[in-house]
Image (cartoon, rainbow, N blue to C red; front, side, top):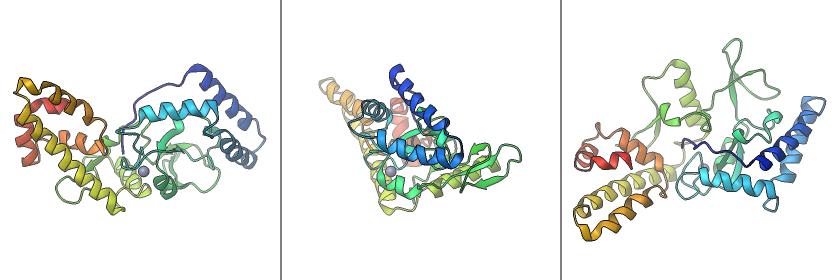
Length: 262
Ligand SMILES: [Zn+2]
């Protein structure tokens, strides 16, 4: 699960989204607003729609790696996800900050699962109908860095874990997010993270072999530049973060401290 870059839409695209949103917001009650949200999003979210072409292009630029899914970071992102589901939050249907670009499998897996901490009581509420005011339990990667809540086990399981020093509430959020997005339940994701670890590690090893040879300067430069286009970039960020904790990484990063800034 990646942290998302901040990026704005061009003014005319933002205005079009706001116009569509206002039409939903003017409907008289929640049920009608939800029905209109679903219908209008379906109508406008098409590859031929000029506004959504720019929305998708901008989301694509914000994805990590080669247009990877914002949740699993492994599959290609091709569906627009509403972080706050439009079935419960029709007022966020055409809100730019509520969009992520994710893969079909993650979209299907999460579906409408959503919970909040009630704004007044702080109580956890699973949302199944019109929600009271409250904050998302699911980590919102458009405004929060998931790495502040999660860490990856790089030595054995390649599963996401809740960070140990979190408050009770943040720890719950971490566990809820791992569970809701099924980040540890798909064997192929664990395998992909393990392979990514090996690939990033071998990249640093190759860098060490080449970096002092001036005739290989271009190769060295390209190897560093292309790293950001690889899948599962969170694995690399975690390798940098745990560089002092894992003997293999400690050795590597001591020899190539410059790799801590790649
Ligand atoms: Zn995915």
